[in-house]
Image (cartoon, rainbow, N blue to C red; front, side, top):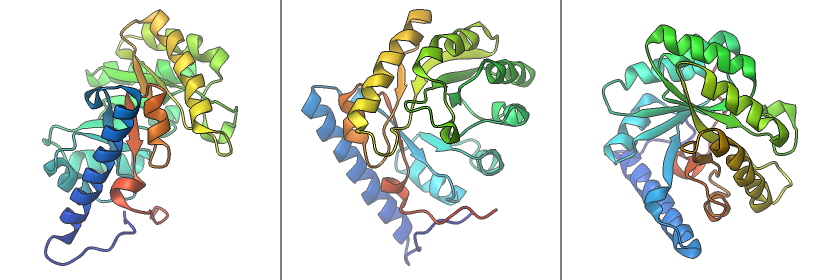
Length: 241
C-alpha cells in the first residue's frame, strides 16, 4: 500500500494530516452554518484506501474515529494492524458475495448493499462471526452498473431484506453523485430514498453522501455521513496490487 504524499522530516506527515483535518472540519462547520444544521449531526469518515495503517493511527491520534476502506484485501489487514484503537470501520466499496465473510469480520458499517442476495450473505457471515453489521442501501442515481447500487425504485426491497436478516441492522442509504450531474440534484434524490428506508425502520436515518469535492452540497441536502479521502490524505496513486 502506498500513498502519493511524501513524508516530511520531523513528523511532517502528522502536521500535514492535522492541517487537512482542521480544514475539512472548517468546511463542515461553515456548510452546516449555511443551512442551519448542527455540525454534531455530521460524521466524518476518513477514507484511507491506498494509505498505510500509519496514517490511520495518526488521524486517530488527531481525533478521527471513523475510517472507510473499499477493497477487502487492503482493509482486512489494516483493521488487524489498527486493532484496539476504538475505530469504527466503514466498508464503502462494492462487496462480492465471496468476500462477505471477510468483510463481516471487521466492518462495523457496510455502505454498499445493493441486492437481496448480498444482504443474505452478509447476514449469514455476521451471525457466524457473532457480530452485527449496520448496512446501508447503495442507491444508483443514474443507473451506471460500474459503480453498483440499486435504482430508487428498488430501495425498499433491498432495505426490507436487510431489516429482515438476522445479524444485520438497516442503517440508511448511500450514493455517489454521478459525474456530470449537479451534486445537489443527486443528493436530493438520495434524501427521498432515505424516506423509503425510514418507512421500514424509523431509526435508519443515515444518509451517506458527499466526498471531498461536494461535501457542502451533501450537507445542505441532509447528509449525516461524509466519505472524505483526498481532502484529508492527498491525491492518491493507483493502488499497489
